[in-house]
Length: 565
Image 1 (cartoon, helix red, strand yellow):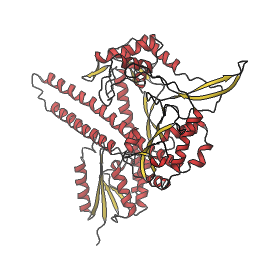
Image 2 (cartoon, one colour):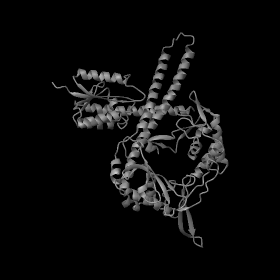
Image 3 (cartoon, rainbow, N blue to C red):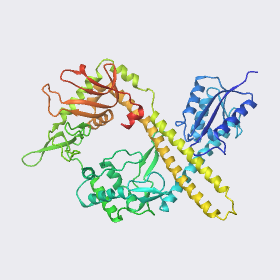
Image 4 (cartoon, one colour):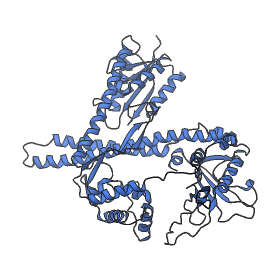
């Protein structure tokens, strides 16, 4: 009799094993079951350190489904240890099972005793998969409630210590070298008219450098860094819970992204504050006032299309869009003149940029549009773009980062388990039993904090990977638009033009003055590769003659690098 073929699928999440069964134990049990049933194992698929919340994050599971649909090995069954290893999302479980059964492949859950080829099998799978999903949601709720309780107690809830503090035995302690800068930031923001950008420049100019730690490698202070400091209540002795929330992306089934929340809970922390609560409240009042946008009363549909993308030819800073509002003799509105100008930022040497040329927006916008028009009408552009759309996704760097985090998590989990074994092995009659047990318990608690921090990092990397996939879709949309640029761009509103330019262009460089040949734009850098004269490029520069003598920058950017840019 011909032996039936089967696939083996195993999975272990980042933080637990199935009823004490490791991956090897699961595989061993599945192989023995296949041998007992006289089945031939045609392939093994294993997702180690992968969550069962959805199938998108399990590459081996997806590969198995593709192999089934292609009829690669002609298998009749997929063997899993328990249904929860197949998936914890009821909809995903049933959809995946239906995909398999469409190709004549059934599911056997060895430990649960479920066979989907039998009458009662699919009903049991429907019930148990729903239970598994509820269990996963309960675990998540319990985990988050544990973190909320820790916040209620005023304890740091895992992750890196905020700037100005250091972690000592899991508790926040003031790092005086950094705290001095925090006090200066609040003092200048509250008691002067300086905004965050000016305070950052002041710090950089007066010899203050940011201590680089964790994943922050930039020594200079920036306005965005100061905003993060001013918005963080930890500096006045409070702990915020729920400032960020992982929310489902509307219109998707299992895609999530991290969203900052306007409403969150504050708890009194046990750590020492760096600033007073009064100063914190004053800073929040100032933030609310500066965050108010001025309401436009004229030229309501106008947008500064290249604002921020256009760079000053002297200091390299982003040029901003502004308006010169012309009025009649009686003071009534006449018309608006829109232009780009430099913000006159201070240089590193303390001197302010002195480039005062104001460029009419119509002139610069038109020059950039003309360049893109010439680009999309060059030979082989359409062919190159069509080849790029839907190309292979490259997340190698993030995959490596994820693997390093998972390795760290496995090591920490092993350390935690060994400490637990040492606690259990203590001799109760030992005169130092209490002190030893307390010491081991404190060490284990510190490991638990580290585990929580790594788990947060894993979730963040996974979100970044999900966002890259979404970014890839967005990039393909831009490529699609480039194919029809000539037909569509003139029909866009200013806001749609600005959205497109920001999704396609990284920076626009101009000459200090219009050249003798009338040219203004010096170079355009793109956010991702485009095709020009048969080459893949990320930038175009023009000389005095024509576009045939283009200076090209070849692109070897991965998708992860493109997303980061």
